Length: 234
Image (cartoon, rainbow, N blue to C red; front, side, top):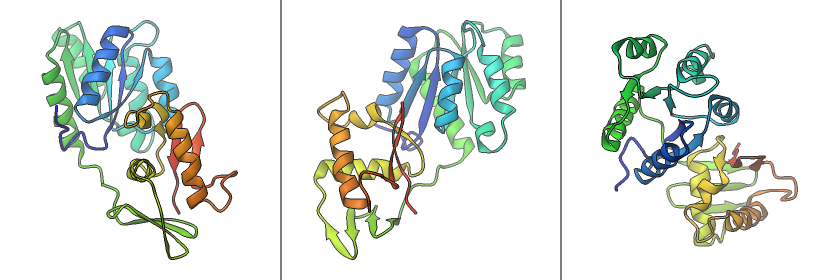
């Protein structure tokens, strides 16, 4: 499956209490080119939203505890850009009253179960188009005495070209494309031969030696505990 223009660099949060459906949605949307984080209930989703920024939320309505309607209402009550994050509601209840309630709470769209995965993808892409394009990272990023040229994939320190392995260069590009936003460790590991994330940890250690003034106390390539890594250029 080819990644769409809308999918490129977009981070989705899928919230569904059904383990099987959640796993299938995560796999399908990841294959479509999205970055996907999943949560099994509203409480877990709230914790993730405190740490990560998402381009769109896919919420199941009927969940134990706090349901999708309540979570949508709480999201819309937040100030700033976070409160405007697009929401697509999923539910086994296809009645017009439920649809109206979801949309009145601020959801951007509503899809009844069961649905075709392709329809879900098309609806997500349509919502993201309406929400506007996410500005792509470009130009150069500075890390004190180091500079990374995103277009050329080259790192310079004090004006001198610093050698990067292919794996280090790809990792730095991934993090640079999401500068100031945490990226999940296992999401970064998807592009490596070691899905456990250990290879990513090794690459991060090596990159810190090349961009940080003090690699043991990193300022620019930060560890986000319980999530992964974040690049924080000047």
